[in-house]
Image (cartoon, rainbow, N blue to C red; front, top):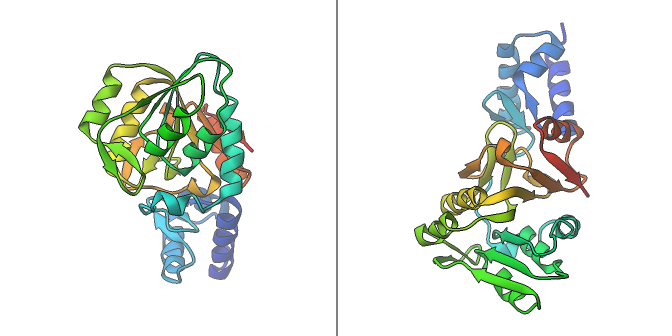
Length: 254
């Protein structure tokens, strides 16, 4: 039987290594009951060393906040650019794609250089203005209520458009990727719109830096089984990467 101090060290070491832990897994590894591990997690949370969720724990607060897009653009710029460059390689000749809102997908839009005709449907005003200046790109700007934090449109009118079209790919940025809960956005109306975008797309490609894993936003978009590809940076833990790939999702690490 391990001591309390040894259990606490084991838990924190695993969190640092993997980015998350499950109560059941740790209990088996240490040969103790799940009740014992839950007590350990409660104690460590009181010491502000981790955050508990249902049946698991993470080293950071798993709940995301709604940050202004201009602030997001300043975060993890190098990682986002690598992700954006890799994502741009997935745009094909005569493609029709949806580009959602967010700092990472806008950086992806900056990397697009179409050889032939490309149709882009977007909720982002910034992305529409950027791509409209490029030859061979036809931009369809969605209408709706302009959301100041993301400089994009939302609302029923925006969502209804996706009942009339089908696109080959959706390039989507998210605020949280949780193995059990799925992918999320910090704004419920954007999450609803993102869900409609997924339904109108043949493939859904998530562009998310590694800080988004193990986190949850306020609005749920969908479960991970609806996602085809995730492009992220090398900061993702090996355990998380393995779990994503075991779900049958193509994981591209840059």
